[in-house]
Length: 265
Length: 326
Image (cartoon, rainbow over the protein chains, first blue to last red):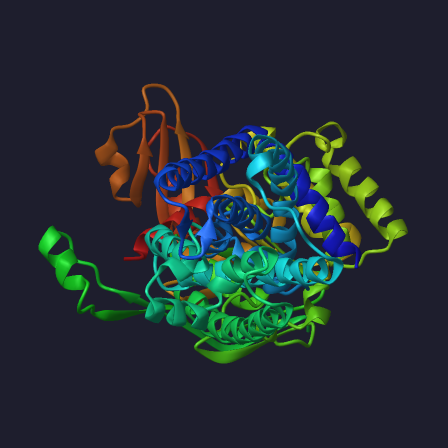
């Protein structure tokens, strides 16, 4: 469909007008990774193995989890959704023959395009510095499964972002909620460290949420810590969550729109 | 009948927010819900090709009505049909046939040249390449914006931006157009440009247009028919010219005196003195007495040079209607 391509193209062009903002963001990304790498390097100076991870496994985990997360992040897309609601620009879409959810998902796709390019450049730099510490071993089926998980993880993150943005229907400011959820999400997804370092109950709880499947499970699969079958199961759980989230979004959208209409922004 | 509105009402919900820190803290736990009746049981209908002006002070319910007709808001009660559709059902078939332009909100992509937004709208409204080219050329020509199409929207002046907004809204040749304060914030020249454009566009394409504006000039120039909304109710619906007769039960007498002129006490008995200088006096007199008063002045011993019976300025009438409010 041409309209989707038009939206994506516009959004990519728009992103290029914010080159400096993107560069700044990219710099922050790397700093976060360097911090994690330094901590683990120090830890492994006095210890051989942490909960079954040796030094190169841990560094690999951190680097690849970081990589995976930045390939699937939506870059605070919730703010765009909330802004549409608060500024009333949602009305612009409402009067047009195009659904808002479709429109925003298309915008988000164009939006990550430039960021993806930046992430790829960063990955080259990161791989260069960590080359001798990283584990590279992957077969074709696993690569395929990881690619599928990458796409589904992105969609889960996108739907979550839109859902959080919809909170804007009821509150005037979503930044606080967004930040709190982001930290919880990073924690439960295993972005900072493998979640099996946590107590067993917490691990069980986190496997119940979709987050672990957007970083922890794929990287475990990559590192050969879980079997291919377990990886497939992870993908299945992700897809179930995707469907659930889509259902929730539809419902919240209906209620939110009623609210939007009743206050008449 | 293109637009038919029957008993349309809209009540907004909002929360009472008292000032002060303690009240804010209390507000976290218990809030008092309040209701504002923005539009109350209004009725009107509009024929194809009409250009109707909605007049009314801020908060009278003009924009709310337009939003309901565009399908952005659900009404609390009542019904409306535009082109045979119920707007708030938001059917694509209806959405492809109307457009809404809000002077205070833009639909153009802020960081991109306006042309990109036009192309996007072309795709969303599924306009064919040939139609797109023809419409765009015509609009660009009429509005004289050839040079600004490739400039980032945020670098345009307000007037240029408004013109681009109009182009974006008209590319799919809507049959019905809602214009909410299209000239707000513009300088006099830009206002006139937009006004001229709306006028000729309406004449040429027979587009049905509802226009809201604060500027009397807009309404005077463009609309034969006006609907005055006060406090969510329709106060007047009819010809702009007969509006004066209804709301201004008096006429204006402009009298010029010769020589040293007159003193104010001498003319006061003829009517309400509106403006006074010894040689020029403007009086307001009841409509039906205007002729008699003029004769009385002429036959008095005052040094009359000239006398003129005139209608009240339309803007004065509207100002009077608005100030009655609240």
